[in-house]
Image (cartoon, rainbow, N blue to C red; front, side, top):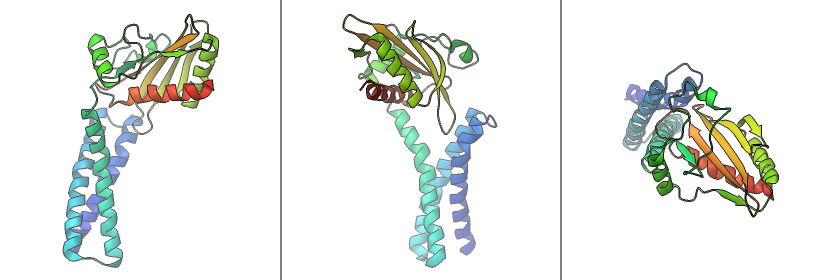
Length: 240
């Protein structure tokens, strides 16, 4: 029984290790995306099994002291290894499988300086089209052109400060054209999503549109829409 319990604990450790290395392996270029996702799936499978087996063993054997502590750690490890991939899976089921999000679906801002950087990206630089726009409007109706009473120059300056606060890599900015292009890199997997911001004058002040697009993946699991919401919030802070 001790050997069996030891195996359960090792499985808990293995599930966390698989979870922990999946992102960095892809980010460093050591593993392909498919391999990294496979590691995530196995982390979830092993984590779920570890969670259940260790709980069963705990209630049957009623361990004490160090053994109880190790069993508890294995339960926590298994739960974490299962929950993190599974929560992303559930999130993916509740958002459309799109990866090109913009506040102006009729005339989205276009990538210029970033276009060469996406030359080898699986997702082309061109806007994904009306079907994507339709799905976006249904899923994220709150994402619309940002209207401001500030002058275009003031709004542009605030947007540039917001980009810096978001810790995006600035690729190019042109106040004359009212255009900012930047790249956001996700922490764990290192996915690169590109952002273009367009500022234009209006009769009452100015307006801003922003577009965020993933370089890889059919679905962004809602990340691009989340990024745009965070940017607008930061922009409003900079305008105060």
